[in-house]
Length: 86
Image (tube, rainbow, N blue to C red; front, side):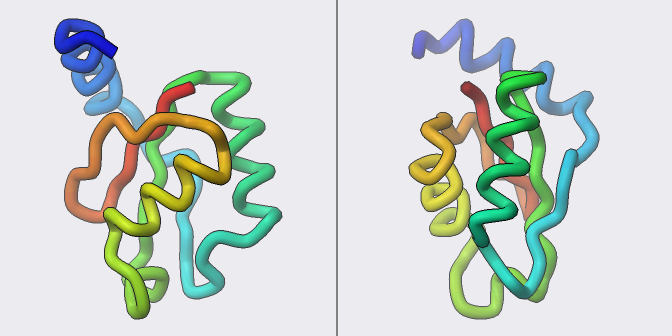
């Protein structure tokens, strides 16, 4: 992905509200299916990592796992929020 497109997606993502929260259960099959459904509909989504989801893994690790599980790309990790694009 080129720098201009990445910049556009980050700008667009700043306006998004998180479509879901990931909590203490972490990445489950249900979570993956729900994220895939949102990605298919919107292509660009924001997900919030609750504090309970980050007890064993950091946000970056969780974001990479989500990216692989949903065949999407991590656009941005800001604080506890992850932006995925497909």
